[in-house]
Image (cartoon, rainbow, N blue to C red; front, side, top):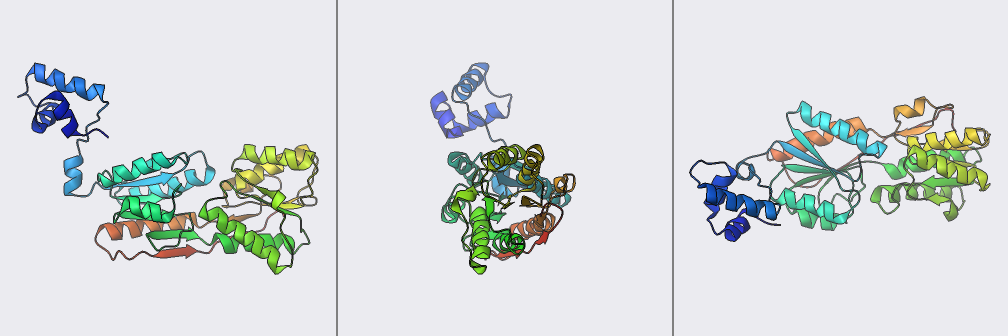
Length: 328
């Protein structure tokens, strides 16, 4: 990444002269100004005019790192986190990584340049050891993902226990041929859910069917497409842990189209207790995620750490609730 020192060297002037050009100082000749500006344009240099200020004091800006705002859960999470930050006098900047490792690393590089005071990490393409190495001793708080809490603070839902309870609700009704949906099966959160799904089967002396584990399923459209596959290919699935209320809504849409009665012939449990779960027919059984409580607690914790609070990592786990409605 090109720096102000590189611009000075390439322009044949001092760093202070480049700084005067950036700040539009009057005591710079037109010739020198044009030369410096031409080099800056050529190398796509964007000056960080607040860098000096950032080195001297807090920016009052907190970065939120998510894979994609199109994902219903992450858009809701960003909304709550941003509101909590704003109420406490802090700005937020949202970085979408699109699950691209290099984009995520670039955000950590900005963090090292003190462009924001802390990062709230909602999902990562890296291991927690790698995240810790890239962020060194700076303030990073993970939410959503079920990290160990060894390297940095973690706020998360007890995904394993809740998924186990939701799965048990269906198994207890004699619905033994179950499917499981995930948006990214490799993430710690989805692994925790899958573990809970399998544990519920183990407690009943049953085996889950690996052919009924569906990955990269996160939207209403994904739910519709999956439903079409299940119902048109006559897959022997009697119920499903949908992974999100949006996926569940898509499955219900497909079931109605294919004259499949929910829950008489096909039971569905979503996740997140999103308002969409109340507008389908039947309403969606779901799992509350404590997202608002977690967001407020997390932001308070970030601010305490920014003001010199004890920096030993903590892990706070929230217990949600399985909410049974008409779809199961």
